[in-house]
Length: 76
Image: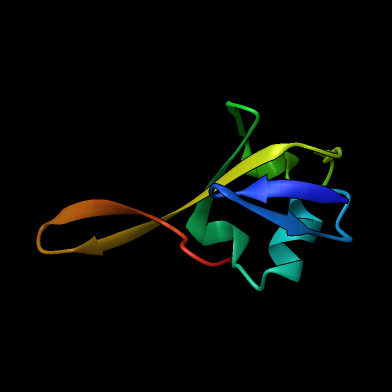
C-alpha cells in the first residue's frame, strides 16, 4: 500500500499505525501520529487502520534547552 509519510510517498506493508511504526523502527511512546489530519491516540495505534493514499504525519518530541521541541521525523 502507498501512503504519504511526513510529506514523502512510501510503500508499506503495514495495515495499522502500530504496524507502520514497527516497520519504521520508531518507538511509539516517543511520537505523536496524525492520519489525514486526525490525531491518533497512542492507545489506538494497534487498531487504527491505514488505507491506500492516507497521509501520515509522525512527530517526535525532544527535550532539551529547558523547553520541549517538536521535530518531524525526516526519514522514518
